Image (cartoon, rainbow, N blue to C red; front, side, top):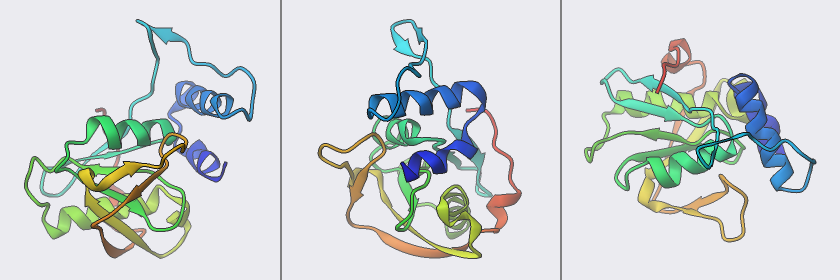
Length: 170
């Protein structure tokens, strides 16, 4: 429930709120809230997308369903996955194209991971990162619930350069 509460401010209008209602219904916390279907699939909102200083695309999930989609379907195994350490928040993906990101891109993406998490109200936050191949679904867990290995941690200013950036359409 904490991660759902954390996702509400990131919802992109009614469609994003419908996704959150659907997640609560799927978990048994609410009735109804199902998303309308389009072409046999649930209609879904899109993740936030940013352009890092290096030109790399950085994707940020708005809710647990998007976090799950980004981490397990959109991210290539060699892309970089980031998440604020120890708090609910967005999964962030650096579309690395098989090459390690430079330090400015990593710091930019880590600032986004911190900002779009419960650590967003702090001045500084720890953010874990690893290759997407090291992120696994938690057995029996809800969407977006993962564990990860082979990670490193970076501490960033939450109000860093990423906060001045505006998301763009995916």
